[in-house]
Image 1 (cartoon, rainbow, N blue to C red):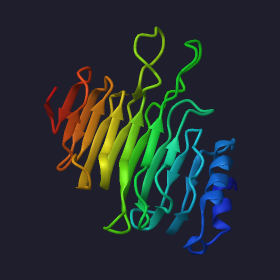
Image 2 (image 1 turned 60 degrees about the vertical axis):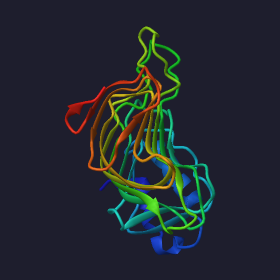
Image 3 (image 1 turned 90 degrees about the vertical axis):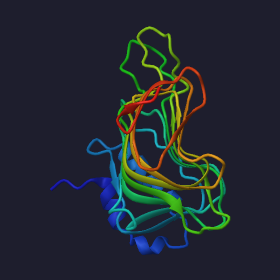
Length: 252
């Protein structure tokens, strides 16, 4: 019977042992093992609270990070600012996913980004694109442990700014990210920020803004946005973004 190495490593530890300690090094090792595995690109975190006292390393492959469910698997950022989960260009083409878990800002921690997906620059049009095409975020809650003095700047940030338009044979922006069954709250700037995103499909709810704006910010020639939401309005920050559908109606 084949056993996925990252899962086996995780099962050797009790999630309860991470309470009030730092899971960051163990998480980095699980990610590294998965990204270098010839078998699987999936890390599954069981029921429990996982405290990150220091920022984890960026994830440089098409990793799927999956929990046992919202409220069951809780990843808790226990440091100030910075990014939390950060997918970048890696040794796989496109892809990756975040599923079935909760991301929380610990009490008295502020700012930073809960999830950032970045499409870094493609260097040649002779190879397949390493653009983060078709990343999936499903059944995720982003929030806070405490109501006072606890926040994120952004919940989800899609960044395609390093892949500009106008280069023959290159795919601009970050493309076809799917966000579904997701709730985001406790943000200073935006629940979702789209920076040169192409074709994102968003089915989410936005609650408890801590700044002056509530919802989805659209910027830098973002195009083809589909929003299905009861509570996430959008704001266009530039004149070049277009083709935005909100709850089945074209708005721009």
